Amino acid sequence: MAPHQTDLVDVERAQWLKHYYFMRAAFSVAWVVAALAVTPSFPVIAGALLVLYPTWDAAANLVDALRSGGLARNRTQALNVLVSLATAVAVVVALQNSMNEVLGVFGAWAILSGLLQLATALRRWRRFGAQWAMVLSGGQSALAGGFFVFQATMPAVPSIANVAGYAGVGALYFLVSAVWLSVAEWRQGARRAS
Image (cartoon, rainbow, N blue to C red; front, top):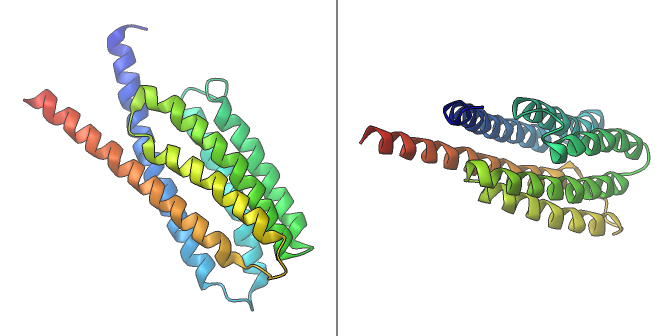
């Protein structure tokens, strides 16, 4: 591929990444609002939301990997798709037992998906820059996962609100990344124009 064509592909992928991060932030905010609106008297809705969250993550990672060169070039995201789908199934099973078990499943998922997100962000940093928020997000996700696993062993019964806080922080990181890429794009355009 000629250097000019490579530049165009990089610009298109950077545009996609910006839109992808905005989309991930919007979904997470909507999910948090829905999760916090659910009261204990609607356990079926809470359960559906808890299954939806990793399912959405799997779909989002799949689409992003496909738009960013395919699954073979984005192995961390391909693995994240499988981990998130397995988590959705594990959440369905855990919902039959207890919310403590559900939180334990979310904890394991947060650790694995956080480390995979961290690896994806480090790989992208070389090409697109502006990935520091995703690096922080991946690292913090892994730490939060460890805390979830610990909380799951406690006698207190957790609720969907425990996961909502985690999702809210994730939304913030996606939003910061999208804004950061937008600012970088604006600066590059301003440099070219001057």
